[in-house]
Length: 619
Image (tube, one colour):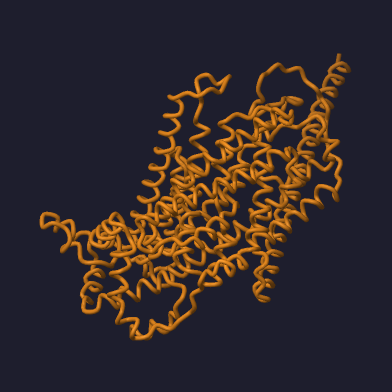
C-alpha cells in the first residue's frame, strides 16, 4: 500500500515537472519569437532610415551642383526601386510554415483567431490573403511582408504633417488674391476631372472585356473611384523648382493652392463614391437614392471637416492671444503642435476626414495663430512642420519604389494602363482649359495661355494618389488600380518633374528676383495694399477681406482695428473682454498703418525680399 502511494506520488511529481518543462519551453519559444520579430522590425526601420539618409545626401549633392534634372522625390523612388529589386530577387529566406489543415466552414475570414494549444490560448490577427502559388512566385515572401506597412499608417501618421504643412505654408496674400480661381480648379475642376477619367476608363474596361483581358469584376463605380484618386495632384517637384527659380507668384499660388485643396476634395470624393451603394447591388445599376446619399456624404464630410479644422484654428488663436504663453516658447510650440494634431484625431473620431480637417486647420493657424506666436515659436513651428513634411514625403516616395517589387498582388494590364494615361491627360485638360476660359471672363489679371499650359503640365500625381490607392487592395479592380497608379506616379514625377525647367523656358514664364526694400517701396504701400483687393479680387473676396479685417483679425489676433470700434455699442462689454492689453499697445501705433501693414505682409508672406533690410528700415 505504501509502495503504491509512493508510485502515485512519483507519477504526480513527474507530470507536474513535465508540465512545467513544457510551459517553460513554450515561454522560451515565445520569447525567441518576440526577439526575432523585434530584430526584424529594427532591421526594417534601419533600412528605411538609410534610404532617407541616402536621399538627403544625394539631394544635397544635386542642390550643390545646381542640378534640376531630378527632384528628391524622384531620387527617393529610384532608391526604393533598387532596394525592392534586392529584396525581391536577391534575398531568399525559407519561411517557417506548419501545414495543419483544419475543417472550418465559413464564408468570410475572421479578423482574429483564437487557438487552444496545450491548454493555452493564442490570438492571431488577420494580415491578408495568402495565394496558393505565393511560395513559388516569391520564396522570400516573409521578408516582403516585413517591409510592407499597414496602409492606415499613411493616412494616420504620414499624410497629416504633409497636409498640415501645405496649409500652414500657404502664401496667404497671393492665395487669397486668387482664391476664386483656386477654389474653381480645386472643387469644380477635380469633380470634372474625376468624371472624365471615370467615363474614359469605363470605355477602356468595356474594351478589355470584349478582348477577354478582364480577369475580374470592374464596375462603373470602380472607374469613378479610380478617377477620384488619380485626380489628386501633387506637384511637389514642380513647386520646389518654382520656389527655387522665383517663378511668377500668381502661377505659384494657383498651382500650390489647387494642389492643397485638390487633395481634400479627392479624399472626400473617393469616400462618397465608396458610400454609393445601389439597392440592386448585384447588377450595379443606377440608383437615384444612393446617388443623392453619396452627394450628401460628400457635402456633409467636406463641410464638417472644414468647420472642425477652422474651429480648432480659432480656439488655438484665442488661447495664444489671451494668455502669456508667448513668454514660454517651448510650451507655446508644444500647445500649437498638440492642438493641430488633435484636430486630425478628433475628426477621425467623429467619422469625418481628418486629413481635410487638418488642412483647413493649417490654413487658419497660418492666417491667425501665427501672428500671435513669439518670434522663437514662429521659427520653431515653421521648421518643425517643414522637417516633418520633408521626412514624410521622402519616406512615401521611397516606399513607392519599394512597393513596386514588395507588393505581391500586382495586376498590370497594358490596355488599362494606356487608357489610364490617356484619361489622365484628358481629365487634366478638361479641368484647366475650360475653367481658365470662364475665369478669365471675370479676372482683371488674366490667366495667360502659357500659364494654362504650365498648369496642365504640372499636374503630377504623388503621395495622395498612392495613399488612396494602397488603402484597399483586396479585389481585382483595386489591385489593378494600385499597380497602374504606381506607374502613373513614376512617369509624372520623373518625366514631368524633370522637364519643368525646359518647359518654363520654352513658355517664357518670367522669374522674379531678390530685391532690396527701399524707402520708395514703403511710400507706395498704400497703393499696393489697396489694389491688392480692389482690383485683383472679385466682390465676394473683397467682402470677405473687409469682414476678416474688421472683425476676425481683431478678435483672434493683435492686429486690425480695435473691436470696440468695429462692433456695435451693445457689444462693447464683450469687445473689452476679448481685447488684450497688447492689442491696445499695438493699435495705438496708428500713425503709420500702411508701413506696418507692408512690413508684416512681407515678413510673413514674401520670399523675394531681404528681410534684414526691411527690419532695419522699420526701426
